[in-house]
Image 1 (cartoon, rainbow, N blue to C red):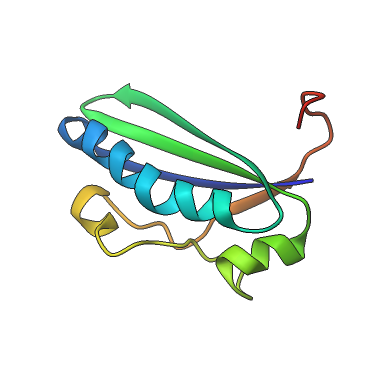
Image 2: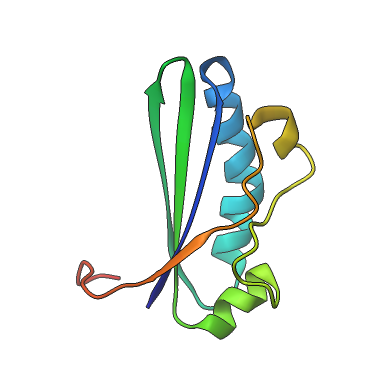
Length: 104
């Protein structure tokens, strides 16, 4: 299994709106992509910003390509992301999952 990790931040005042938008766009598309094994969205508030970490789990690199295209390291953004995010990081990180809960 492979974990794909994206991070971004919004002003704290936009945190709830961005989470709603993220659920309707990225989370929904991730879950609908064949080979996706689950999605976690983490958030922490610090110094007036809401920092988001999105972890998606994948059965293979081929499955990740179905979501992200051939440039798997490139972050995927949606039309209104720039209305919320402080910056648009160009890349994501991938990790091999070596230990996971039994139900994954």
